[in-house]
Image 1 (tube, rainbow, N blue to C red):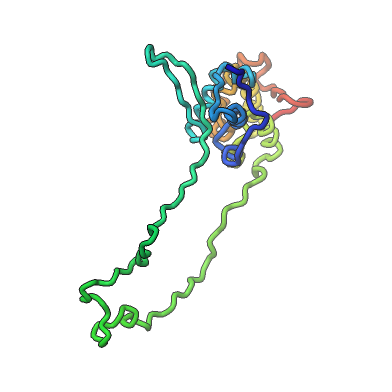
Image 2 (image 1 turned 180 degrees about the horizontal axis):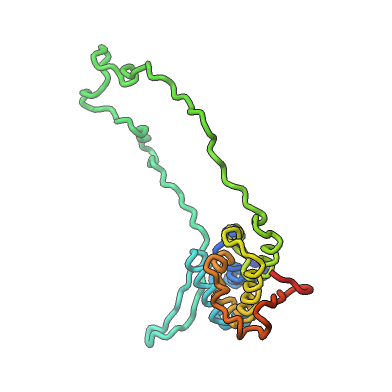
Amino acid sequence: MAERKPAFWAVLPARVRYDPELRPNAKLLYAEITAMADATGYCWASNAYLAELFAISPRTVRELVQSLERKGYLSVEVIRDPCNNAVVERRIWVDRPAIVDEPDATPSGENPPYPSGENPPDPSGENSPDPSGENPPLEQSKDRNIPPIVPQRGRRAKGPKKPKAAPDWKPDRFAAFWDYYPRGESKQAAIRAWDNLKPDDDLLTVMGRALTIQMASKMWQDGIGIPYASTWLNQRRWTEVDLSAGTGGPPDEPQPLRGEGVRYL
């Protein structure tokens, strides 16, 4: 059997690329799966293969594939041995949105149906308009004195709010937090959470130290269990960190953030 290799091109459609609920690694993994599925129609690679390819853990690959499957972007098929039910192969299919053709309401050679709300002519003639005028058509019996509908005046409907580029509360400190936080999704929700929280300088110091410890953890390094920034703020996730055992520095000493030079939240 010839060695199977991924195609030169990868596909990342807009619906996946701009999905705010997907992690960036999930989008990159989707593109790689499309490259591997180019020749056979499905991706043949195992979690271990993909983990080695992207320098992440097989568990992280499994979670990313499951997130794409839940969104309907992928479907997973497991091929088993009929004798012992052992897994022989896993196939990851790239699902594309189905094109649904609306059925033709009028079969070839038949008369078209009557418009909605109208009845076909009665073969008996009982419900047909009477030419003598005794049963005038519906159009002639309508009240012609109905006043026209006048648009109501008042406040115009508000359009969608423009997204805020920065919070009202300490925007420069939020920019430092957002640049450092490892999950750059749902920025608008994070801005709202920041304005609701209104952290002062002392709290920002605690948040910076806690976030430094969390980012050094193995789970976060593997991309596992990292909440949205808004969730981290709303649920006060910095309180889950034991700061006394994390850095060795005094409690009121702000911890530097990674990057060029020394930065603080």
